[in-house]
Image (cartoon, rainbow, N blue to C red; front, side, top):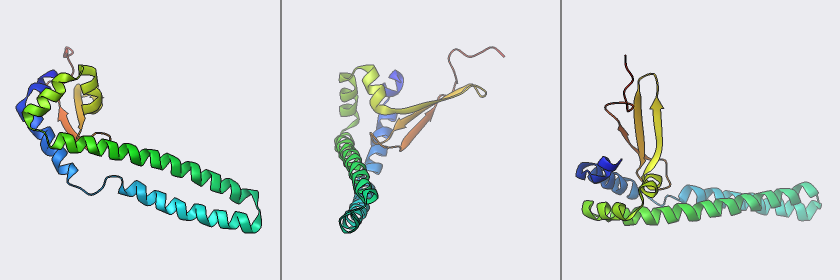
Length: 153
């Protein structure tokens, strides 16, 4: 990771990937659409609760309200991550290097790495980097040498 974070080629690819994914429409749009649909379902359940005075519909309204609130928090987090992605995409390689240098190594790992995939049969390690913080769009970089230290044959 330290070598990757010092590499101009890696940082350039990371910035290019962030710019590609950042050029898309509002990343929170699918969540906003879910909220809109849930609002309609909630309104319909509220109408039925008022007209029938049925406890089932009252509970359904409460459930829809909780789901909407959770999605609104998710949408806010996605938009916050997108603002960070906008900032990162506007950086230069040198600016990104300086930004990463200011971070503790474990924080940089938390922000940049989505997951590490270990394959004990092939003795390989694959690091999947986040292209856009908070989203599952990866830049995958496989270690050419596998696990360290290499196991004897």
